[in-house]
Length: 264
Image 1 (cartoon, rainbow, N blue to C red):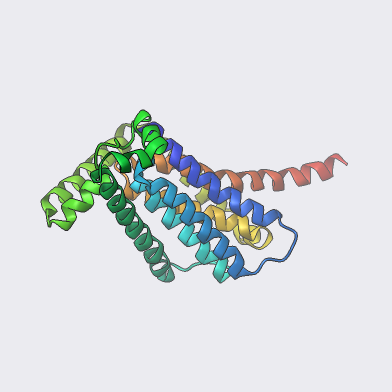
Image 2: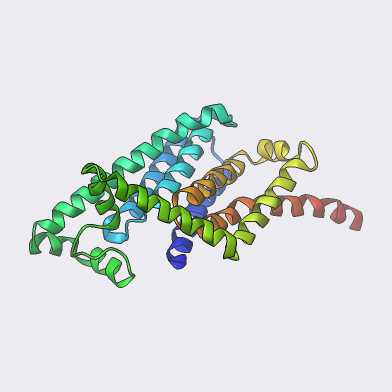
């Protein structure tokens, strides 16, 4: 499970940061709408990949990706910060779309597996790949599909038991896992770099706006991964690296400039 968490958390963190780094490097002027549209399309593709039942149905990863890419698109479109009072609407839309996508993909997958050998053959290689990797078996609906079916049938006790089990697992891992130390270290690094000295982070936002948008989006993705997964501490610890390392490197770069000038 930890290996799967590492995989999709690395994917989300790297794609968000890599996309914003490319935007930072581009030399031609790009409109805010075009940058936001690019983030939305890329995010939709990544989330669809994570949500696909034939590839393991990483619902938590798809939802964390929707949160991260949704906030990234919002910041790119607005061209600046996203106050907390405006964060909820911008999160609700991509998360709702991700849930709808999960339901649609799992409904199609369930219908395909129920249709017999022909539909199973159409699934082919992706289903076999998922099965060999410990993901969804092509013989029936995914675990997400079963949860949606329980919800549709009004079996709220089953849904409640699933949520409770995931919460208990997360709390247990937070207490005993070394990943919690990684997450706390990343958050501490970010806090120090943002608060001290005053005005430095605002200067970075003016000098490297796209890169800072990516770091902010990865922080939101980190929090979503922590809340929406039963082993969320693992995914959150991995994703926080993609938020804390860029500011840390910028800080080291700024610290090396006076030294280089003194050497001259």
